[in-house]
Each structure stands twice: as C-alpha cells, then as structure tokens.
Length: 161
Ligand SMILES: [Zn+2]
Image (cartoon, rainbow, N blue to C red; front, side, top):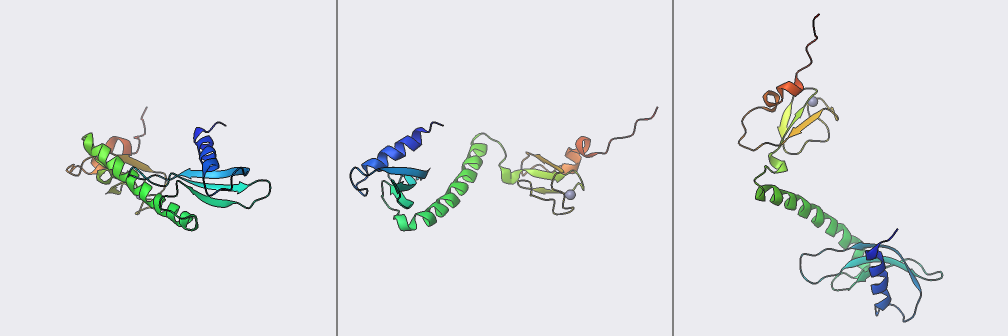
C-alpha cells in the first residue's frame, strides 16, 4: 500500500538532528498532529533503530510537545479534533441555511416517543436501538414528529378482500 505521508514522515525523521547520523531505522506508526496556527508539531512517530532497537516516540518538528508527553498530548488533540468536527458541521449547516444536528428531531418508530438533537443510541422510553427515524427540522417547527411522520409510523392497515 502506498502512503505518501508515511514516506514523508520517514524522510523527515531521517533528517532529524535527534537521530544519530546515518543510523538505520524503521517507522512503525505515525499520526499527523493538526494545529490551527501556522507552526506546530506536525506528526507523532513511533520508530525503532535497526536492527534491534526498542520502539521510541518522536515528535516531528518538535515545536512544543516533548516525546514524554506525546501520548497525553494526542489524547488532548483528539478531544479538540472531535469538538472541531462538531463545530465545523454546525458551521456548514448554518452557512447553508440548514438546521444544525442539535435542532433535529428524532422519533422512535417502536413507541412513538420523540426528542430533539441527534438520535440517542437507545430510545429513552422503550429501549429500542433500531427503530429510529431521524429528520432534519428547525427549532421553530412546532409539528410533533409523530404527526409529521404519520405515514411512516402508522401500522399497515390489513387489506380486505
Ligand atoms: Zn421507543
């Protein structure tokens, strides 16, 4: 499998002044580190010196994160990435004039209870985890989900004749 970023990380680590010159090494894993500024540590790298070195942590560019704090820094980064993804989705929805996920309604097709926001993992009323109908509406929409979804929620009438 070709991974241009993997090749880039391997090449950059090879130039790194922290590594003894001319040493053979193997990159075992890497993860990009994202910042909103113009300068920052660019990747977390797990590598080992060949032929039998132990895995070592390294921070490409080494601007702020020390290798001994790398794993906690990555945990902190994940929390920030997740918040950023939520904010970015909300921003896109707002910019496009669409309701944000917080404004959506969900309705349980099993017990017909409803609520606002992204659909819960399980229905808080009946506990069903596979009977959802989630639809995008606005906070100003006063029509109950059960009414709005009448056609989808109503049990099928048995056909006579
Ligand atoms: Zn339910």
